[in-house]
Amino acid sequence: MTRLLFAGALAVAALVAGGCLGPGTTRSTEFYVLSSVEPAAPEAEGSRPEGGAAVGVGPIALPAYLDRSEIIARTSANRIELYEFARWGEPLQTNFARVLANDVARLLPTDRVAVFPWDSSTPVAYRVEVEVARFGQEPGGAVMLVARWQLFREDERGRLLARRCLYREEAERRDPASAVAAMSRALARLARDVSEAIRDLDS
Image 1 (cartoon, rainbow, N blue to C red):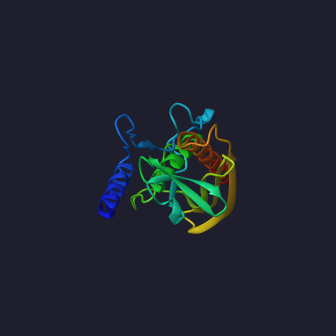
Image 2 (cartoon, rainbow, N blue to C red):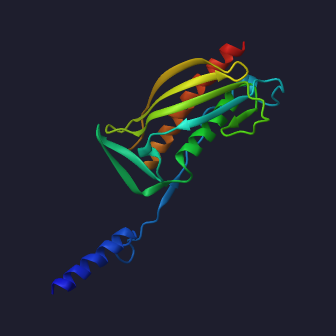
Image 3 (cartoon, rainbow, N blue to C red):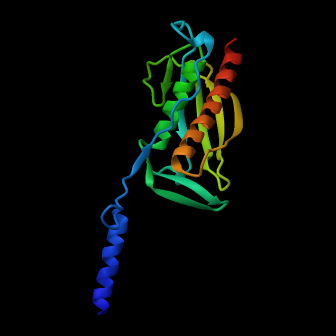
């Protein structure tokens, strides 16, 4: 009898792990990516000048708890939960860098924006590095992006500035889709600050 009960428990566990508890209850995994939400600056529309400053984005450093395929959310200051059926469509570090680069390219009068690691022959004038401390949905539902970013001028091999940013974006609901949309908006704010800093230095 004990063996039968144990076998039955294993069977139920296998069904739960597979996302199926019976006919009509199968749940498929959903995949999400960050996206660009920043409109192009007026002077960046149309054909862009070839002399625009080339920008390199990266490396991007994420905390280990974010370096996973599942989308996470905080339930308290010290506890996180994983959305079992919500995954990133590509590694978050890769997605973060690509979208940040795309947003920066849309805001600056140049299309010469490369993502780390770029070819050694790529003439990068400015390089931005980002170290993320927190990125995701908080217990109250809003999304937070907390990071430290540094801007370097490659020809001088020196750091131009270092800033700590904290962006808060409200999400419509506490679910993966709303969280990722708000995360994209927070990332766009980072791109805006980076672009403004480069504009000031390049003027």
